[in-house]
Image (cartoon, rainbow, N blue to C red; front, side, top):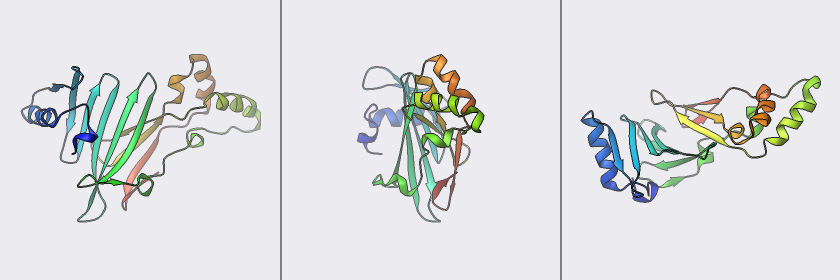
Length: 182
């Protein structure tokens, strides 16, 4: 992996984390800011790093076909509401166009539109959800990617409570035929 994709950690930091985990030790290193970063999961196709107290980085190797893989990364920052960035790469770390592999949800995908009796309350709550924030997480055991609406986490408690009755469950994507599908 090129250093440019993980500027917080040096190549030695990343290698140390792998060595620590393989030795059944806590894989914690001091990052470039003098703070702690920890590799929390490592398998043949998955890595999860707690980059800082407020950010994570995940990587999953996904099969396109019998002989070709793509690498998908999820970078998440929380302050306090979380927002994730999803990127795709070839197996030699050349960037790929994400929209070829996933159609990200829009706000409406996370909301249940009510019948006519609750339309006023829905419209009022929906207007307050003016920024789309999503938190994405891989399932380390399989190729599922769960995307959760994080927008309510930046709203006031009162405003978030008004939106809550209209929220759907997180969206779970499944990797099939070389792309994530709902």
